Length: 230
Image (cartoon, rainbow, N blue to C red; front, side, top):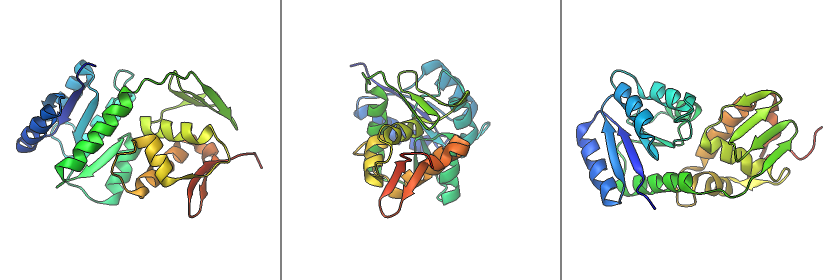
């Protein structure tokens, strides 16, 4: 298997050096950029397997970099792990809504961060052999083409939101625990809080619009896709 490439977009040079050293030890090819504009340029040219993205960047801030990566057909499937000194929940929510797949606040422990990186890269590298299209209550999800449609409208979901919807819609009526959804959508060795799934569900519901209530909360357990129309 060819080596995976990690792009670090971070203006703190000492942190870039530490991350580069440890990622290279794990066998990754590492590239870096110290401002958002250069980071976007390098992402478009390299098409890395993962982007480590700081929020507080010069020239173009991290959230805008994330938005542009998600809006481009060339880069929309690349996993994005946000690194930031911001610890407020509102920033975490905005990060996920913009399309981040994971979110780590500084200072962070290196070993858990590396586990998150490995899980996201592994998820991207998995070859999904099934060619399934599922339609339920007017929501259609096409896994081979990675498309979700409600009527004639195609929705723009992040990779994590897509996996979340795919897991739920295949078995309408079945209640999934948050832990099951984390394993299915983010990898079973990803260290995340259960509320992370809640954030992804909130964003998914918003993007589904009037179909958002099809993703039902099962109190004390987790979530399910509605089994039958009222």
